[in-house]
Amino acid sequence: MRIVRFSYGEGVAFGVIEPNPQGEVVEAIAGHPFAPIERTGVAVRLEEVRLLAPVLPSKVVAIGRNYAAHAAEMDSDVPDLPLIFLKPSTAVVGPGEPIFAPPSSTRVDYEGELAVVIGRLCRDVPEERAMDVVLGYTCGNDVTARDQQKTDGQWSRAKGYDTFCPLGPWIQTDLDVADLAIRTRLNGELKQDGRTSQIIHKIPRLIAHITSCMTLLPGDVILTGTPEGVGPMQVADEVSVEIEGVGMLVNPVRAR
Image 1 (tube, rainbow, N blue to C red):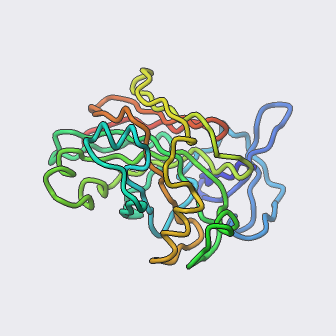
Image 2 (tube, rainbow, N blue to C red):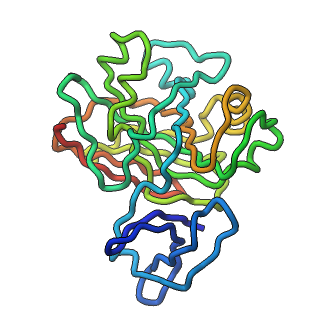
Image 3 (cartoon, rainbow, N blue to C red):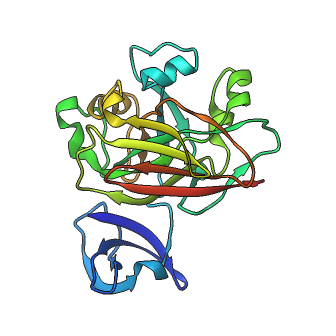
């Protein structure tokens, strides 16, 4: 099932994408997707709606250096435990929305990532039950002001600017993410070409580790790390993150 959050006319709703002889449609659901899905029967052609960020998380929990090759390209070691940092909810934007490059940074990088969407309130989740709290998966871009990441000594500013967490285009709920291709392109040129099987700390361990120190709420997002090949974006560029079986997230880069 593909779950979307969309605007149509003056309203915003969650919906599910369904096949149709005339093309795919979005069928609105009642309320939110963190409870049993209740279809309304109201359907709109997919191309007639505007897709928004599929969730509005209370927080985005991101994982650093979770691909060995990326850690190496950053001249860093792979941590023994998952390296956690937070991105604010205000960093989240949806597909097609611009990433605004702040004038205070001289280098803004893309980082394509598999994003895990949490489906229910959870704390102290054991690894063997971790997948029970997952609603589904989407594409993410952990945009980073690389120069400020190096100079600040911690990552809050570099990772936390408005628009620095594109998510989308939808949540895919029925998917085995053990070994999927994850590719990032800049202006159509392939820059990152990895697989989720290269993730060092797997999703169950991430969930167990994160929930040992903080409660996750429905709609919270875990960014699972980025493959090698990160690099800078310039104003007027277009960046896309594509994950096999999930979809493609595309965002332009604009001056703030």
